Length: 136
Image: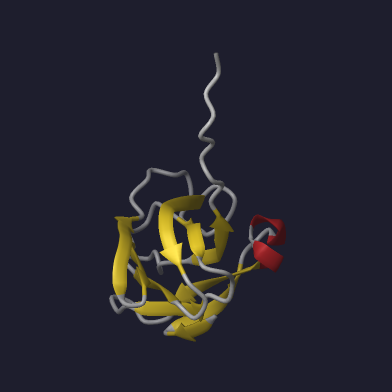
């Protein structure tokens, strides 16, 4: 991923994040971005964003594909910690996204309070085709 404004952070204990690390927005009140190019066959996919939703702020997140907004939300759950970790790890599922090789996927995070729009990882998964069969 290419990071703009995001920086690596340690998550303690290490097993509560990918390889013990996540990323956080280094600039308070400013938008940070993490982006990458999709490199798989064209099709319908689900984009899963694993992030940390702390109780000391309400960061905003947006996901764009080729500069087109596909989802946005606020990290406003009432979870029991003010630190990134197992108690604040949260997943956002974005389903039904048509992707082609070369598409740019961009996650924008805007911090709030002491919550620095922290991210753990992004996973892109192929959606299974719906079965056209019926039971009798």
